[in-house]
Image 1 (cartoon, rainbow over the protein chains, first blue to last red):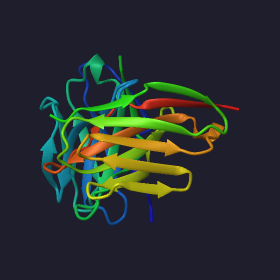
Image 2: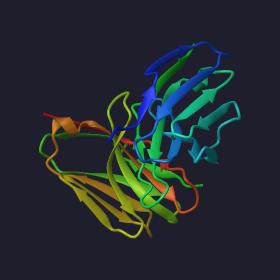
Image 3: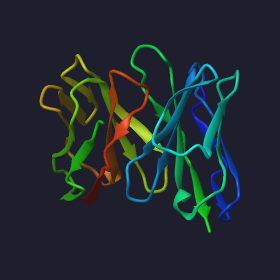
Image 4: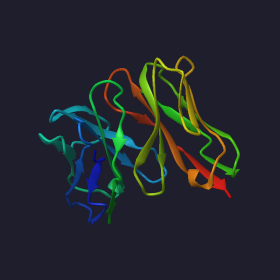
Length: 113
Length: 112
């Protein structure tokens, strides 16, 4: 059984650019959630995908968007990057039944200059 | 909106000591609560998950309790070791909605 994987590990972008982050969910999981974690803070919920549809969204602007694919992997896209978007982006997968226990990937560190 | 608070923000203890980390939440309508460990710059590792109908869960030297009515959970770590040094986060999942609400964590340092 493979765990949650994310790519890339680190990324440096310039303000105004666009970025795509990727996540492969744990085997057997059909739900993917994305979180943003600023330095010294707890993770903040961005959105969740279940069966390729957005299934809840946190307080993030529309320039944060996502996709989930038939194999339950997912992408997070951020347009018009701002300096405050610099953070650790975490992906979590779970099974939409029972305990809903979340399993997190190692994260992608995004730096916007 | 659910708010999660963790106290203390930082804790430093000598090796071998037993310790308690606290988590409080404002809305008792939760589905479950999950404790995580995070090493610097890394992802989150799940430690324990407590369903709303449960009072506690144990795994090795870790014991987590839940008092839903008072909005509190504690994580008890027995016989602490330097390898336990990390940030510990609690997260609650409400009955309605799929997201988890996180606290800001307790940074634990175990001194050899």
